[in-house]
Length: 114
Image 1 (cartoon, rainbow, N blue to C red):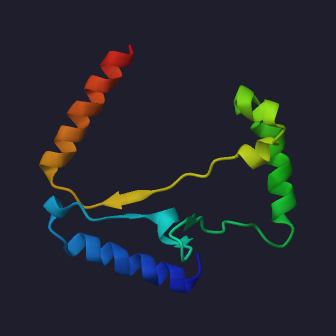
Image 2 (cartoon, rainbow, N blue to C red):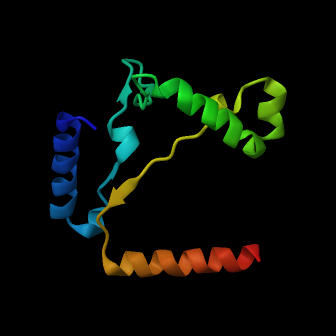
């Protein structure tokens, strides 16, 4: 991240930490650094790689991720690199009661899967 992006994230985290945990304010780190078109469509942030790393990472992803592709992705002709899914980190200030409730609900969901 650039210094400006780090400073912006710090502002968001301070805002969240000062909020009432019952208000459930959050920041989706990747989404926060994306944007929106005038028509309201989301534009993902650029996590591009520079100085030659892009081609190295593309090759690595194509080799490492091919086994994780779905049948539909393979049939569509995209490469593993194109199917690569980045992840997002969401930070939310919540009360201990919300954490407990989430843990109980996750446990119940896991038990149903088994």
